[in-house]
Structure formats: structure tokens, C-alpha cells
Image 1: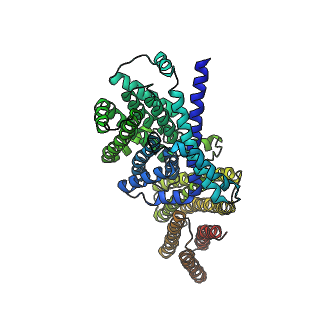
Image 2: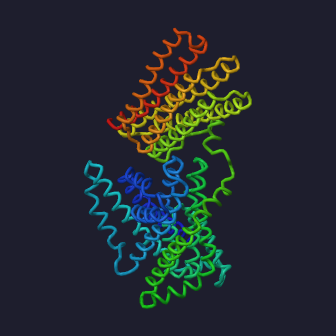
Image 3: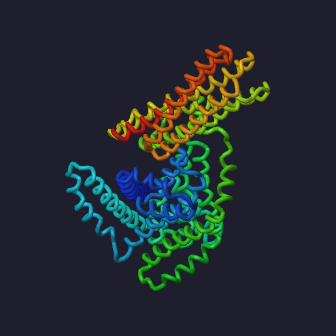
Length: 555
């Protein structure tokens, strides 16, 4: 019965620490959600810049899991590339070591745990204010307070009489060496995967170390395992993502797993070396804490330097670890099982912008397909292009259905006026892009049917249609830029739309004149006129994307 009480007490202390960590990171993320994501997606053009970014962002919000999950979501939304994400992952590993140093500080003279309750008391009046910012500040302060209260509870329970005997019962004396270190590495990985927080696992390991429950080498091995276990969160988040997001999650695992492999054999050497560095610290608890935190930082820094040199290899290897050619979203869509799992409504709407950009890229390829059909005569070549157009058309339709599922799921959430306006705008954009795809597919089938009937265009007609298609591509390129920036350049859109409308009007007038003069058969003239009108409608629908984005900004 005593052991059950002890176990539940340790579990309770861990729960308080974990709740404090979650409260802290959630409060900071809510206070800076949009700037955080915009900053992360805009300063990762190089591995080194991304590393610095990952370090500072993780140090700020005190949650590597929050950063990696957001990173996976940004890659899934098309806002980051896989290569750009590698640097952020490396920096995140270093940034998460700040948590260990904050915990170690509470062991020495600078005891944050002694200030926990007074800090919480100062934050109570902020809860009484009916304003968002004071409440967010209060949540941050309470998060810090609970974090260190939980750590104190863990230390106290680890130090109770009999705790060492209990661990000796379940973990008999394994001695020291590579075998026992590997076992504790696996234990650390399993513990972190179980509680979904490397910070909480590190706190538990530190409490066990300073209480004498485990020795220094075993604690350092558990730290390595905790680096591996924390990658589970990103891999779980990538389950419903596309192939790119899964590859980012696998790269995160590879960075920490490969690093642990080369470091586990060096644990005795580093344990002795770092113990010598802090030999002057009189308090053995503080000295052990310094050694563990230093090891955590040293490992992640050197592993980050090594893995940055192998970044291209990691990107290539991640392809082999994601063997499915069909994304989970596509499978769920095909089976009708997509549930629209929402982690964050704002982030999901950002993913929708990425979906629109991918659809825009497909539409540009479809425009090129229509242009190619205008010049093909060979039936076999026309058949190849038609099959490709059908695949692209199916892809845009499936993408529209997937976006619709996401938007419906977001609509079930409690949204702010800003997010409601964005949801309304994106809901209007989705069918517009789907209709452009349908129109381009129809044009391709009509071109093939007319070709088999012997209806062909004059060189001037073909040149005019190609000019219309070129302007439609220009409009799609501008649409991609607006979606990437989540802002509407209405002047540029109006300029391109004006070109399309002016060309349409000029072609219509010329068409009527040429038809009166009998320059081409009526069947060819009617088909030509229909294509011009259809392309103008496509241009209008593409331009409407900017109009809807602008309505969102003005809401």
C-alpha cells in the first residue's frame, strides 16, 4: 500500500509539472500565435538561419513539441519546404535544453520554486480583469509557478525512504557500461513517448538523479532517450498530413536517433569530463544537475553541427521512410473517413491556403495542356495529353472536396470575428478554383472531339487563344503570390483582368468581322468564340480569389 501511495504521489507531482508546462506554452502560443507562425515561415531560407530561429522560438515558448508540430503543419500547408525545416528542427533540439537549465537553477541558491507561490499570488489580480492580455500574462505566470512546484514535489517523492529500494527491485544492479546505458536510453524514450513531454521526462530524470535513485551515466542515457521520445509528437501530428509533412517528422526522428547512437558510447567519457568541470560546486545535487544540463546542451549542439552537414542525406533518407505514394488525406478522402481533425482553427485555415496554392499549380499545368492540344494533330499524342488532363482535373476536384471537409470542420469550432471572416472568404474561393479546373478539362475534351470531326483553327485563331491562355497563366501566378502572402494586390489583379477583358473584347469584334467575311467555317467560328468566352470566365474566377482575400482583410 505504501508503494502505491508513493507511485501515485510521484505521478501527481509529474502531473503538476506537466500541467504547468502545458499552461505556460499554451499561454505564450495564444499570445503570439499569428506572429509565431508568420515568423517561422518567413525566416527559414537557410539551414543556419532556421537553426537560430528554432532555438529562439523554442526557448521562448518552452515547448519543442509545439514548434515541431507547427513546423509539420506549415510544411503540410506548403508554407515551408522540407529542406527549410531541417534547420528549425536542429535549433529546436538546442532550444529545448533551456528548460533543463531553468530546472537546475531551482536546485541552487537561485530557487525559483521558493518564488512560485508568491508569483502566483501576484498574478491573481490579473485574473479578475476582464481583458485578454492580463489573463494571458496570468496564465504564463501560473505556468511557471506550477512547473517549479511540480519539480519540488517530484524531488521530495524521489527522496523518500525506500524509493531507491523500489527502483532496485524493478531495475536490479546493472552496473555501468554500454548495455545498461542502452537500456536506460530506451527507458527514457519510452517515458517521453508515454507522457508526451521531454521537459517533464527531463524533470523526472533530474529528480531521480539528485535523489540517488539512478546514477549519473544512467541519467545521461535517459536524456538521450528523451530526445528520441519527443519526436513521437511530430510523427503523430503528421499522420493526417501529406507526404512532405511525414518526411519532416521522420527527419526529426533521424536527427535525434542517429545522434543518440554515436553519443551513447561516449557517455562515460563525457560524464567524467563534465563532472571535473563542475567539481568546484559543493552541493552534490546542484553539481549533478549542472552535469546533466551541460550534457543535454553539449549533445544537442554537437549533434546539430554534425547533422547540418548531413542535411541533404537526411532529406534523401526520409523518402525511404515514407514509402506510401498516397497521402493519408487522400486515402481518407477516397474512403470518406476524413474527420477534419482540428488542432488549431487558424492553422487549419493556413493549410487551406496551401491547398489552394497546390490547386493553382495544377491549374497552370492544365492551361499548358490546353495550349499543347491546340497544336497537336497525332491521335496518340492527343490521347496522352487528355489522360494527363483528366488526372489533373480529378486532382483539383479531390482537393476541393478535401478543402470543403476542412472548412466544414473549422465551421464547427468557436471562432473569433477575424477567423469567421477568413472562413467565409476561403469558402467562396474553393468552388471558384474547382470550376476553373472543370472548365479546362471540358475545353480539352472539346478540342479533341472537334479535332476528330475535322474542325481546326486558323493560325491567327490559334495565336489569339494562346495569348488568352498566357494571360490566364499570368493571373494564376499572381493568385499564387497573393495566397502565399495571404494578401490581395488588387491593383495588379485589376491590371491582369483588364488585359484579359480587353483581349476578349477585341477578339469578339474581330471574330464577328471575320465571320461576316467568311474567313473560316461557321462551326469553327462558334467553337472559337466559345473558347474565348470560357477563358474569360476562368480569368474572372481567378481574379475573384483576390477579391475574397481583400474582403477578409477588410472584415
